[in-house]
Length: 333
Image 1 (tube, rainbow, N blue to C red):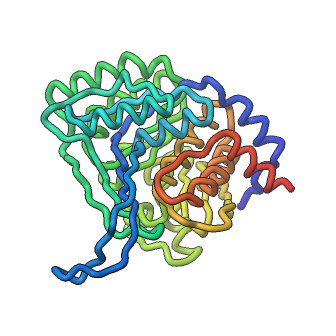
Image 2: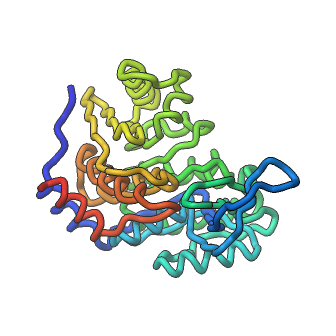
């Protein structure tokens, strides 16, 4: 059966319990680099547009963006990951510091590059993306140092986000360590999953795949309500997760809870300009709300408001407390 979403007063009260919550974020940190420009001609060398670059900007992506979202909502994120020993790592440290995110638990590994996603934007449209990365599992001394950081800081936290972009930080060793600590501490684990690790997340609190990822994992493309139900319930039962939240872009969100409760949350976005980083926003708000005592429906309702904020902007961005409150107020009216 479908469940109605909570009212605005309940969500406002929940936001009031966000401040100071200590949430660990384990995952792949990256630099999102944007080259902004305009197109006025086609290259004579190949049938491609020539983008005349007018400005450059940087922000944090992946697990770093999850941490930035948590910080913007008043939480105290603890970021656990691995960077290269390069100029891009220095850029990422500077961008994290600018957003108030402590990077003291990030590990440096000179054998691999810091992940950088470079997007060329012309007239508010992405023309091309170029990635610099390693997808090999973190190993050797860097892995040992990361495991030590997980064991040191995670027991002091109130929740865990696993932000898995498939760049090597989330692997069998780090998951075994982090999920074991979370189970013993009895706090919620919220996962933005990568398909290749899906069965490692058995028994977690909540997974937040998008519709395409959920369908791929279950070997079934979601094309209508019937296939959505098949995929959502199939994934929940396969992993015995407390909940699975399938994000569906303009179609909103669908929450499948252990015990058979289903909730559909229609999108609050009036316009969609860019979904980059929306998954980071969703999992960060869900994790923070659960740490603040929310049930799954309330946590996902809040994340739905936050997602509606960030997809109105071009590029990776965060949802602030003020924007979240404003969205709830508009909906209440």
